[in-house]
Length: 556
Image 1 (cartoon, helix red, strand yellow):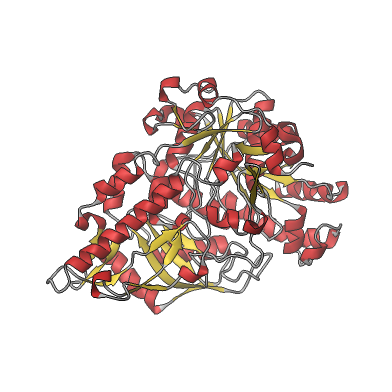
Image 2: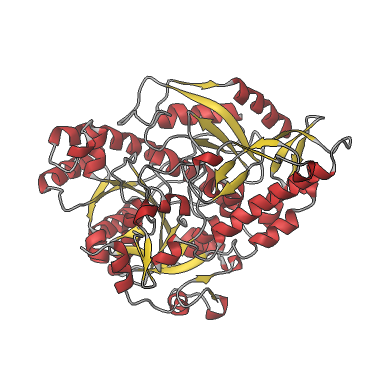
């Protein structure tokens, strides 16, 4: 089979205005970025249609280094729905340059289930990530200047700064740094660091804002530090929220592109689910629901991370009610959770597969706790056997959930017809009930963390560091205990230990720190040793990328 990038180049793309008008978006509302990409304004959302049409979430079992293929299944499902006569749109996050040049090589789907033009989407796209990076670092520069210009002025200095810088590159050397070295005119010497751009609170704000005015309001509420009177110091205290909104005025509008079969796709926002809330923007999802009978969206990593945050944060804030959740599985993933060594996971192994069902069952149980109807999508590879597929199908029947084989990677929409039919049948006959949340708004922050840890992760308890306990006092002082919680932890386990595959048991979740995302309006709890700035692997994907005769190679 051809590499992803060759398949992408073989597709005849349709002008983006035609893609837009075919789903009902007026041509006058399409703001072109070249021929095949466009920005669509947020004021086109119709809330009545948002509630009327069908939202489908795609999540997965706990990921492994073998991959699961959630984005490919999401795109494939939209293609399959189109094949059976439904008006479908897919709504995804934007790829980050860090993982593209690090581990992944690309994040626009794969095979014959991609969003296009994939080179643009995987690289600079419409500039949204650059706008977020610039806006975040502009705040940092203006804060540093404020402190420099007001040195020694009573009431104008901070005893603690919590705002860092960001960069959309995996760079472990920037996790902890010192700025302002050298001459006095170089600024105040400060210990600080960089997070990756998807971990920026600006990225979360972009994805959770309803419009530009809401975006500006939230920017003003960002917590930058604490003054010597123990009062919060925010962006609005610098009187720069309007200037930062200027940098994001175009980025707030979702991006319209197309799939390998010319289906409409909105790709907007890019928070990671292990260190942020892991969902595409509310406005992109709502525009898709305004014009699509069925909208397929995904949440990052497994159901304990992306799906939990999708329900407890995004849906809670946006008033969204998903009709169904799809959980993606692969035989390799199940076998790795069944203690099969990674070099053996492509070989038949009935015992390892069955043992791995425990991980799938825990995710099914968790998703059902939110009142969701569930369909399991088996992402099929060439080495998968009919016997093993039959085992998984029978197991899903025992669990009372739908099951379908997906081959969209190799067959496009035709390979997802079975999945599309099961999804539609389930929505028509057994749609999800009203969304149930893991915790209540009026629970204190500590209780919210404990409810997620015990009821979703299966922990025996939660241990809070002294630093976290101090931050809880600030949360209470600021009157923001009603904010939802976003737990940052490893994606490879239900616990905070990435080596605990399957279903971790008998563990206590350790919360090392609390980060107040006051503008995004959620509290981040840092569990274990999770890094908000990833490093590069020994052999990064960048080593396989090149431009030959003006053509990009190595993206996937």
